[in-house]
Length: 112
Image 1 (cartoon, rainbow, N blue to C red):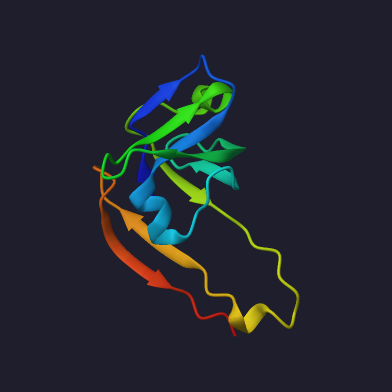
Image 2 (cartoon, rainbow, N blue to C red; image 1 turned 60 degrees about the vertical axis):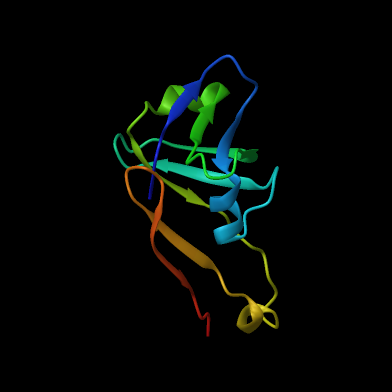
């Protein structure tokens, strides 16, 4: 979970995420993600833009800005398409964030 820090309606789309947080879970710039808002139940698909390192930014842009407001708690989900042979080598990363978007828990999932 993360906390929305800003919304910017006048933009063509995306979610801007602190680069340190992207690195912690392996997100790439322009990677497609699903964003689920725990505060209101809305979901939207978009792509990731790199935010300033250490800023804690979690900014909803464009149409996605209509689904959240600062302070809302969101979950950002990225998906991998792997073959059955690749499953055991795939290790998803999870990070739980506090209200300031600092990592308070982190782990790698062992898929078997």
